[in-house]
Length: 346
Image 1 (cartoon, helix red, strand yellow):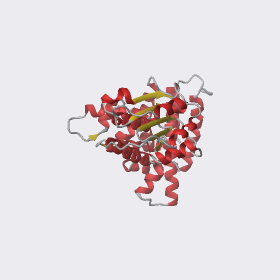
Image 2 (cartoon, helix red, strand yellow; image 1 turned 60 degrees about the vertical axis):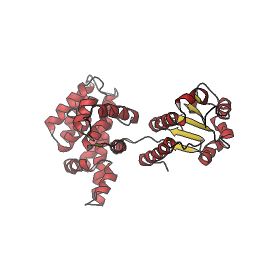
Image 3 (cartoon, one colour; image 1 turned 90 degrees about the vertical axis):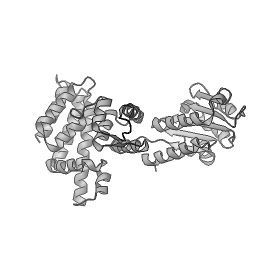
Image 4 (cartoon, one colour; image 1 turned 30 degrees about the vertical axis):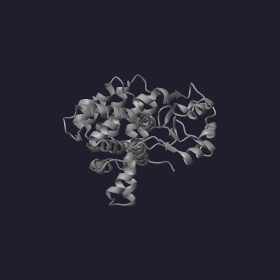
């Protein structure tokens, strides 16, 4: 079973704590679709494995596109010079041919070498000796992507790890802006932190708007809220503003609306099964923070199951139009306003 982001976070923290204490494994296999955790652990190992004056003779950083397995094994089998250990890092290791032959080294790695293999966008074959030898003698971190419905919870957890608390609506807006690009979220967070007042430990939606450059008032996040509440004038105004943005893309807007109405359908299913669900049950079904429950309580009233299904049909139609199919002369902005009006009139 794939690990959730909470498990990956916990494993990362454990690796980081050990690295900062000077406790290293002889081999690290950092792999998976999400590069954020791979880069985070790799950078941490590079930072703490060697002192600055030891790196000239004991640090080798190469790329899978420019090296091969025999060269990496040769480098890893060298002994350190005037240092306790040497560090060998292979970035983009997934590009190396016959990477499974690294089992020749990983079955009996040197204690004086720290070998880091970074496989971005790919995982090692878990049936083969290479993977099994790293599991036995080193550390494997499998970095799975955070799914869309998990992103606000990931942001909240990330801020907590940095000693900060972020308001649920602020996390939702940041998640809408950055999507599931964790590295981008981290970069935007650095920007926000630099501009927080000294001693501040809370991040509000105002902080997101001022430092990230995104407006709550005219965002998909706000459009879905106004649709849930059936605030027609504000929903249409927001749709027009979003559509006029230079980088607006109709397929992305439709995707966000689909996610929202799919959640409403899931909430209907939960209520049919359990008329008085607990907050934990709502979180599991909706994938949102309790802060948003009142919105969905209203949405299920305004959009019964039949209306939700009609919205899904509209979204399929406008997804096709947004990709150039049978849209006539309508611009993407006009399509979004038209779609919003049709949803409101169901």
